[in-house]
Length: 150
Image 1 (tube, helix red, strand yellow):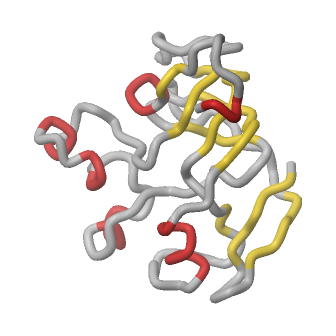
Image 2: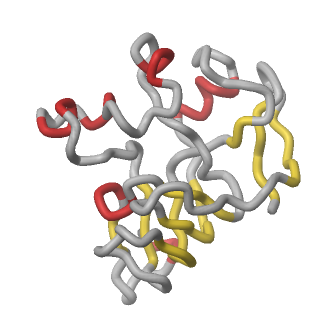
């Protein structure tokens, strides 16, 4: 698939990367139909977030259609249209229970770096995205709304 990848400060390229796969029973795979570029993406572009590594996929706010779900993903099903919000949350850790979703203890792949600079795994500016904790994180889009009306 094609994805926008970070290769260094001010160096973003459209690369061919492997398709995402279900890694956890609570995952979903979403085919992206639109994505946003926000201030956080600009921080990544300018390398203000120290956890970025060569080849990391950019983005984290997107919309798309669920094309695969893990065995424990119950609220979403294949064919659902969803919006991926700013944060990815497990909904169960101490920080999530306190409402501190941006510092979810389970959704940050680089927890040790996340302890220093809040953040989470990126991936929204690609053709497909693996969504951890899909039932907790993503919001279904009503059929009556088009991709441009979300």
